[in-house]
Length: 293
Image (cartoon, rainbow, N blue to C red):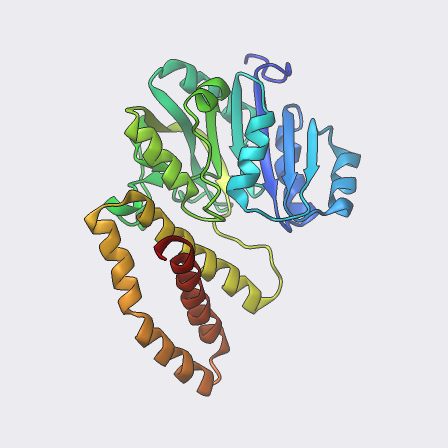
């Protein structure tokens, strides 16, 4: 296997926010031979100290303000100067062998901009890795692919690309997406310039999907529902088609029902549902004030 840890071939970018040391340790332990950039959006100096005791990290940046995963990824990508860059979720495990396969595929397919592995959970069950763009279908089906397959969109939890191509085509993540849909948006941009996104079955990763590492139950609900709603609305707003504006308008029409449900759930002490509905309404109002007024 070709040497990828020569400081010129590969950089791995990882964005953190409140991940426990035990989780990130498992991820880093598999990739410790590589050049790694860590962006910590939680400004956690204690975690940084622990990690640096065990691993040699090329760049470790503490952000005083959490500007979201898209901004964090961009921050790391801009620092990267190697042939390949791999953006990797802190809860995504991948071996050097599987990373090497990704680099080989990226070199093989000249029209591809992103190569992603096929993901499994810790029970070795196939999980969602890629599929249609949101306007073309739901992410409710796990694709059991054979070989190398062009997909419309791949998860941002594990993406490999040629750094120069990425920068030359200005394929950075849109930082208006805080937590969700930025990978879909990036893949949609790639499609618009007649380039491809490829998922390969020859390379695998282990990914725990969608876990927000915040202990407070209600805050966790708020973070997910607010950001998912806002980012979903912004995604369709960017598309600027009749169909996408109809999706936004339909959400707006649901607001009176949301307010009624909010009161009913509160009166019946269903506080988790209260937070969920309040988050969605707040997200729409925030989106409206920024983009529709």
